[in-house]
Image 1 (cartoon, rainbow, N blue to C red):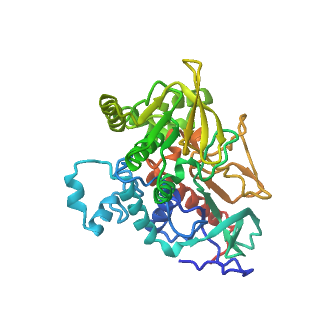
Image 2 (image 1 turned 180 degrees about the horizontal axis):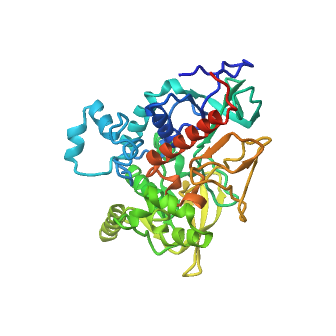
Image 3 (image 1 turned 90 degrees about the horizontal axis):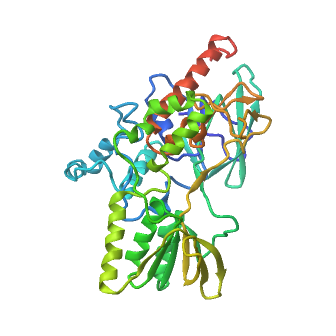
Length: 438
């Protein structure tokens, strides 16, 4: 394991084979693949959070994963890996208990514990509390083409030299134009801690949730059961929640081979694939959750105590701070009416966007397609000018690799493919005689 560059030091330490920017599930899978490779791989990962965490704000009790536990960090790539979900269950003493549940889908809380368990085993490879500032070409000095990565930790600059960088910085919340988050205006990313805070302050009496996807439906259900005297208003631009298609044939769009087929396809075919299979991932909800919400809504109508309310084919036209709350204007596209709701909180469950993987680059120019998107090879390597070193992207790749690019489904396979490409690149440098004997 290579030592890290020390804070405040001008010495970047030994040359790395891989420097990972971000340590979410994507680069966690890569760290596992590197550790299991028969050849020695010098790898290090930088994470701006103080410790490992994955969507902590949406760890709603009882919320289930939509991805099979078999598609964990390693199993599809290496079925014998000690980092598989079943081994995690064995170490936690819950293997038989889990099998008795007869489901492929663990709760989100349990899966977060699995990810944390895996990350904990790799603590020595990660510099937490470290924020990357820039990535630039470095002088080779007989080591072949290198990159220098500058970062900040504890208020000081740290530097690293590496043959390859893998950028996997995750997703950022998407909000409608003009929306500014605050004590009463939330994105669902921080739902659980915000609910806990508000519950401790005495709760709320009316909530508005914007969105039609899984996170929106989960937010509605969680608010409804947590604040038992409050109204929860769901606002969406459909007649109702649409079920996610997770049938066997539809799920093939997330197969590893599908990602490569997508990459080989011309732009018009890529667009058609995404459009025709959006109902596997975007603005759709697990059918069991849809049924549960409908039953609650119907039961309340029967009892005459309706707390769960739906505003179909509608959108939020305005949100005004009234001092003691919010005035939320809901515009109906069907009725042509506007209704003002006196609310305590509005929750935007309006999704995420991938961060720009090129924002760290200095002196390196990425090639782009006719829509301004970064060009990526089949191995997830960025097409760049200014360096012969390798820069890879995990996550911001839907335009080149399809619907599974931001999901957990292909982490194990993708990690192996990126690692193979990194090592092939290293070997080609050695073969060409550019790399000095070490």
